[in-house]
Length: 285
Ligand SMILES: Nc1ncnc2c1ncn2[C@@H]1O[C@H](COP(=O)(O)OP(=O)(O)OP(=O)(O)O)[C@@H](O)[C@H]1O
Image 1 (cartoon, protein in one colour):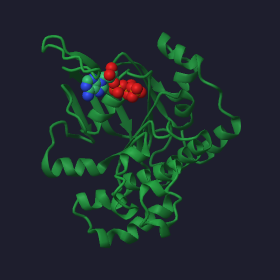
Image 2 (tube, helix red, strand yellow):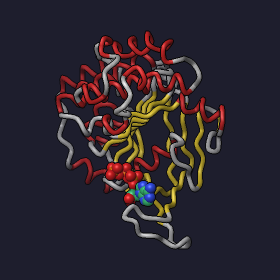
Image 3 (tube, helix red, strand yellow):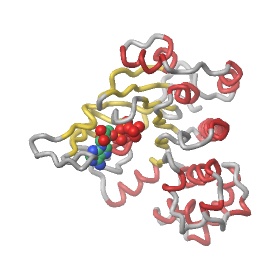
């Protein structure tokens, strides 16, 4: 952690009044230009340095669309994305490349987000090569170091995704995400495709990496129990809008919006030993 309890950490990544209109619904229904479908409606959120912002809501509420706009994977229809003081909404060329290094993604399904024809050396070194920071051969020691850091055997660097378990494949995705020392990692349902025991290990790894490197996370999940374990702040989405946001303890202890209360009613409680261990590691508080 880079800040004290008295000074709030500076905002590293911000979304300002983001809107996304689609002209074709995912079901293939073509909408007329006058009747677009608004998937995200005036969303503003801030991600402080070294902190985790949880983004929760039911399926279809607009979480992934919001994240993809913030990470510049898709263009917003309106609104702005800022990293530090810099507006990167329309950044192109070198500015966009730099942004892509600063803001990395970890996706839900590690197997579909890793090219099955590339081995770990190729996969994990990709951000470094994209930035022109390294060649494949020169990146191998760094890849092995990253593999070790995320709990993988560096001797397996020539293996392909299919030779790993789901949890190990997600660790490859995490190694790739941290390869070029990003400032923010957008985790889009990073554990929901994994077995519960493996989920806990991957969440623990993300928490450790944050404590060690000060990463900020935007952590998307439909599972509030998971968000409660990792998030410092929580934003609740419904129907494309953020209906409530605040510090994690406030959201969980005193939800103000009816929809948040409904979501919370379905959350199992977390074991106290988890909570105390996380606090002692410097995780969410
Ligand atoms: N490329 C697209 N074209 C048209 N509609 C889209 C597109 N992507 C998403 N949508 C629609 O936008 C809405 C928000 O989708 P989004 O994936 O952002 O929600 P979500 O909260 O992440 O849901 P989930 O948890 O199921 O991924 C949904 O109604 C979805 O069908």
